[in-house]
Length: 298
Image (cartoon, rainbow, N blue to C red; front, side, top):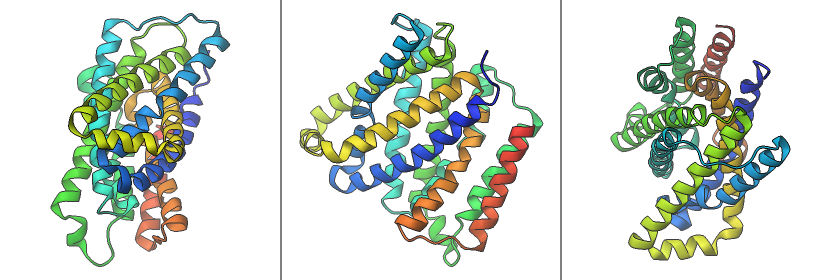
């Protein structure tokens, strides 16, 4: 038996770890480019994913086995859409505040609920719908600019952010489908297996792409291994926890609770990037908090 609240712990820690990973990737974008910084997340995350899987297999006494075809198909969907979503997010971050870009990507839960219902048949209650809308409204409010609204709605960052949100939503549903169809009988094994499968696929896909299109970027990634390892670890650690949460709860509920990442992004922006929050941001945070309370009690 698994504690009903465990997915909440996994999600909260994953959200904090993801904020750190986003910051580390953002710092690598200047030297490695958008695709290069995206590749770091997967390539340098793979060894840590393998380590997590090995520890889980040893701890549970479960033999390693290949996931069924259905699970692998869902993994392909999740892995490839996550690559595209991450690249779009990092591209948007080059011209926008990290908090604003996080806001765009955190419109994702609305789409996750739709994709989860359409593709996995996971129903969404009225309470969850209310929580999604309330929390999403709070995220948008807390990042709305004080002076230049037109800048916030400028076409390029808006399209990049919203497209990233849609692809992240499809990725979450894809990985949820992959994990729940592994069928090992142990959610730790299921989540860890799909993490490795996803990272392996993503690493291979981006390595081949860069070898054909930008071999200099591959050399730069190899040369920046000391700076890349922390981003790889943070990415793999966050993904491990997301996948554990997906193994226990629907993607819509997990990704709605994940909106608390905006708290961590705001903290990092305020202390590390000198981007200060004002009254509107704090009101938005309150709405996010109210949405989370509704979600957990709905």
